[in-house]
Image (cartoon, rainbow, N blue to C red; front, side, top):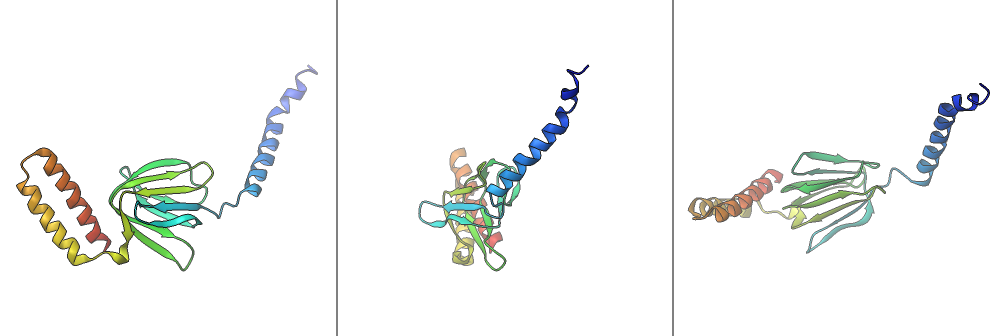
Length: 163
């Protein structure tokens, strides 16, 4: 029986070790920091800058990312990615599509096919583009052309929603 007594203390010992490791991990990493890299082929919006929150729409859901978010991958839908830098600075960036990656170290990468600040969008031009895409979709002769125009229509509709 004396041999089994040390084993009975194992669960308590494991809990204590777990607390020590968790405390050391939290001390070595500042969870208020969430480095963001956000770029498109034509522009870099953030390069490893610390931000507080990111809101984006993926093909599967709308995602709110805070520091210490679980690692994930997502495909972005056309729409606005909202980046809260601090209490006074929020940037709204429209993306046509792209990818979103939350890494195990807490950093986030957003790579967009096309992206621009919402302030740079023109509502009149978006309405004209939407009308042209709708006309082209109705006149399309192949399924491929129709699908391409439907994607364009979705992008213009989301631009108008953003405005």
